[in-house]
Length: 403
Image 1: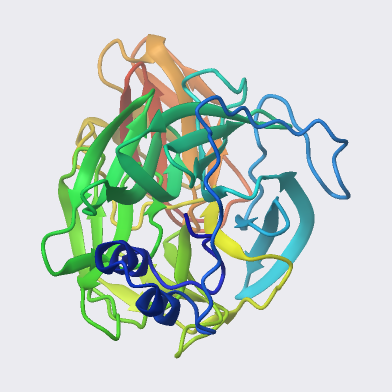
Image 2: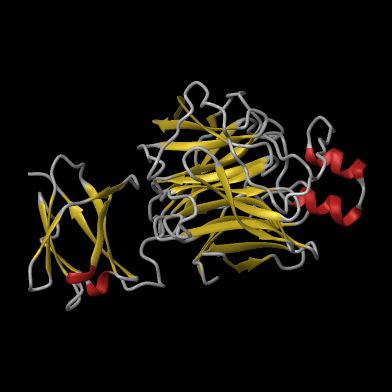
């Protein structure tokens, strides 16, 4: 298997290598220097990753959950065996100094709930293992545990949010696909038709659990032509025309209503940058590239924990029509009308800010199926209220104004 690095091209280049069996072609397309790094494939059938040494400087060991900090994102670095946290504020990227242990063959990175209970952490990190058979691993606070292996799928990168984890890769028949993982079960969300490829070696997940990924024609030089938004059932919710040079596009993540694409130093147009793609209901607009020149490792994936809902409410859940919210606009309090008898089963109430930040909110409930929310010191703008009731998720939206 080949080590994926900050200097590699998207996943279609790997497909070209395996289909053509031509190392010269692979060397030309996988690295701007024409060098392909190879790794021996160990027997991982009984692999259990463990980090018994003491944490290094800045390395974090947690119990319960991996904390989510505002405006933060993570990168997985293969040559340092670390996950590193960065903050992105006003188009400036700053390392926080917080790191987590990783391993050399962990490549993709996701942040989601561990419903298996194996790690004892939720939410936590998931990672894809690159050696055959492909595997999915979960972070338990100090080490990584193998939770599933998939011998007929070659995993590449992954992403997630709450109960949804997505993985891209290709099957033994060299067909590229996007998969959804949940509780040991993997299902196909999207399969590339002939002549088309997933152009960025990653995907992003919004606060509704919908997945965003770029596609384009399998012709060189490689460019995206569309951004697809799908739910976990494989239903296409949105399609936006988006075109950019995707050479060395190694990862992406979502903060608020913006999707950021990581471009490596081999990208001919925007080397060593994050490319912002701002999304709303009807458009996806490319912004000014942000320099991302930290060289502490060969980055292979990106992930965040503060996605927004840029395409609005999902078609797959019971949504705002059932949630009457008032007053709207709201100043410092909001009343939500729930479906009958739903209040006794409320598990969580979350406010989602215009920037995509999720705030777990205290509430009062009465027997008339009315939910009372109080808030203050919040910026003006459009907010969503997200309420988990048993196995269902309900949404409402309101405008917050100040006196």
